[in-house]
Amino acid sequence: MRRIQRVAENVTEQKRAGYALVFFAMLLLGIMAMAALVIDIGFARLTQRQMKQATDAAALEAIRKSDVETATSHVYAGRTAATDIGRRQAAADLVTALFDDDFDDSDDARSFGAGPAVDLSGGIELNDGFFASQQMSAPATPVYKPQLQLNTGDASDGDIVSAGTELTVRLQRNSSGGVAGVSSNGGTVPYLFGRGSLLASELKATGIGLTVTSTAEMHPVVRIGVRQRFGEVVVAGGIPFAVSRLVWEGLPVNLPTSVPLTIGSCGATSVVLTEIGQAAVLLPTPLMADGYVAVADSIGGTDRVIGFGWALIRPDPGNPANVQIVKHRDAEVSQTVAPENATARLSEAWTSLSELSDADRQTVIDANRSLTDPLVSPILNPEE
Image (cartoon, rainbow, N blue to C red; front, side, top):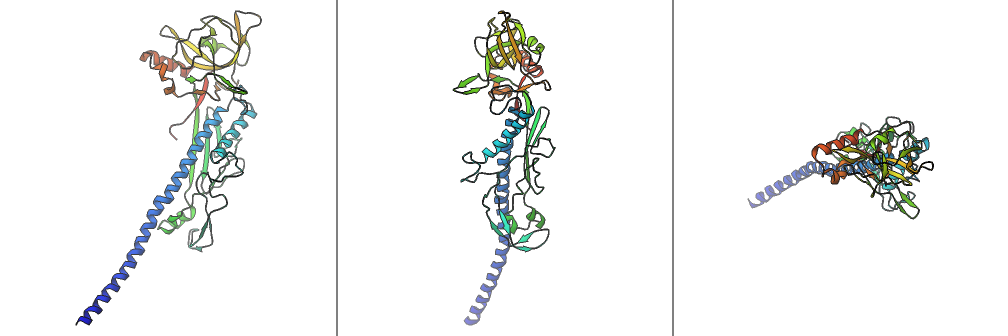
């Protein structure tokens, strides 16, 4: 009797062992699915974030270089063909630098890049282009190193697309491929653990496709910094001079114009005016400088800064009571872009705006938005 009982117990244990194998096989599929969700999707989200940070920075950089040559950002150059190529190259160079550890793209010991790169080889072909049991290895450069194409023809699907007051930068990791001179592509982000899940074979073979875009738009500047020099390096910025809105909007473009030094027209200021909403007191004093000038208008009975322009100011050799003003702006556009030391974010001018009444504050903001020939600065489109 005892012998029969022991045999029955052994049979039961063997059955349980068989069940354990089945349960483990089923559990393994779930584990692979969870690993795919956590690791593969995590890789994709990290890659997307890295790409977005790069396109954001590149879009801002490209617009900032709209009116200067990249080597002399403190000097107004106008929107020449050389400047357009220069700003596109500046955006491309910035993306390259962001994904490098020592600003030398010939070597990268830390493998900074826009997501992982994996080589898959061999395997057994199943269906929909998917191969099982493939060998996975890391290439010599185990990450994607984007090299933006300049897209000077502004093809709609290019890496850099300029359209009026907007500029879009695009990075792609998908299966569509790139076009030399137009667009770059790092290929899809491959599934790793997801290859062992129940995901559709076509999706596992294709990988995870990503396309990231950032659009920067030009808006009137609301705050500037002071023009500075550090040895041979000059930083574009504000100079102690202000011009009335009436005079500023009436000045011809890039033509020396003699203007009387009066409180109602233009003149030096005791300090550099840096924010819209500040009170502007114009002194009948000449100045010799090239930089951002404040544009003032009467708000609530007080002359206040409503925006900024970029101009060359110098004494008038024919009349000491006047100054010559050269308003910088390309004849084919309606604004000049500040390459640095300026912002169009309204919150950055709140120190001065908060001191005004609600009515005066709104009047200043409206005047800033409607100013003709304003100095502008890029802001990222918040919808992207």
